[in-house]
Image 1 (cartoon, helix red, strand yellow):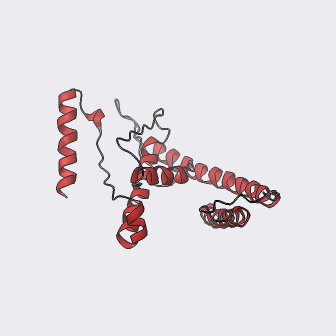
Image 2 (tube, one colour):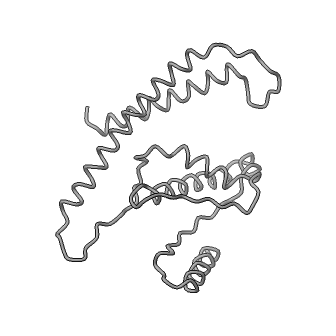
Image 3 (cartoon, helix red, strand yellow):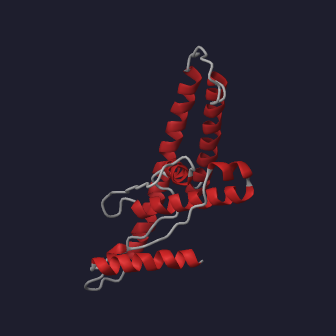
Length: 192
């Protein structure tokens, strides 16, 4: 079995295990709306499923990381060295750092009608640690929520439509130009 097939198989198994864990927790605790306190049964099955889930996620992460490493290595090997040339820092469309769940939760927080504004979020990290890729994941999750709002009235009651505007402040060295350019970008998005 090649890497791509194994990655696909692992993703299916992980989704299945997550569903089993959710069903087991639901069976133990009941729906989240229930107020009545129930005795907590032993969590043996959940621990077994969680352990199996962890091992599968670990294997998936290793496979995806090695796949990304091969891509980057090939990219570097194909470069013809020129003075002043910098290796590009490109966003990944794959979730190589297993951050999709965090992106989903942040997207829900951003879109939720219960979230009080103003809301400020910061994503910090060194060069190449996946900040832009993580933002791309959040953007994708916000688009999913926007689609749900369009198609489902209950989602419309829970979430607000969100617009994602990309702006690179590092392109400017003057604070006045940064503000002008950012407002220009926001206005441009608003016009759409």
